[in-house]
Length: 193
Length: 193
Image (cartoon, rainbow over all chains, first blue to last red; front, side, top):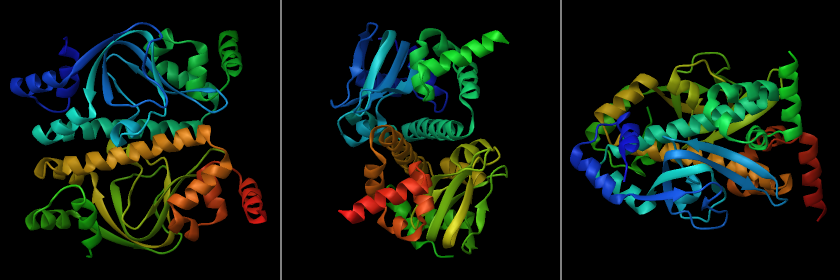
């Protein structure tokens, strides 16, 4: 199991000993996903948090009328799950699907809880992860309320150029909360300049 | 300085010794706010996180056209700041104003950082705080996408009855992302039943 990227990710914030790394490694499972495979479906149990070793995942929510809303993307080096449902043992509210073939490492809720006890500094790591996730959502909410769609699209291209190259226009539009037709018109205006 | 409520809040998740409590107490400032006072204004520095000892605060964002969007409320026993700007030393994106007279305890970013080093289990406490904040925002986003305004209003009344009793209809509407007129029509339908 290739865990190099995972430990680079964790060691950005805390220093793990070889023994601690080995203990964490013993708690992980891995999964290979083909394009369009799901690792999580709305309504099903959500027992894992995933670290993306390679590929690209998309979390999305289908509302009762079937509208597809992209909640987040996760590239190599990102963590993803339905956090609320994972932490509280509830059925998932979102789907998570491979946009590209993926290799992910899986950590169960019980294993994560044991890490908080056995390697207390893991609390520091996860605290930073949660801070970043909360701030990202706060920023996104405020940008949705304040910036015109054109600026949000340009912000997305600047912030996530790799993702923009791998997903469909429809998926970007659903992340930005606009229709694909409106996103097309924004792109055409940009080209016309 | 009355810190009973604060230590009850922290000791829900970690156990602090008397010495640790005393150290934390030495890092705090306190502030009394009258109704409508601001503790944070958009564009200004955001050096503190606040613990609400009593009263009610409202965080809101004025978009460029002057529309008022309620980001969150904070009652007694809640923590509040503009987290993204507080953690990253950026000018505030939101205003925080007293809806009712408030007594708040103030902890600076430097003091919070020192607590993460000096009392490592404080990482565990703040990790749980950030998990809860992130999950609350995730849930709110998905409910905004999936539930009709009427159900979201009823959910708000059930979840936050104390807040609902203290704020204006306009403020609830701006938290729910609907117009005050639409909220009035929902309330009138409820009364008519």
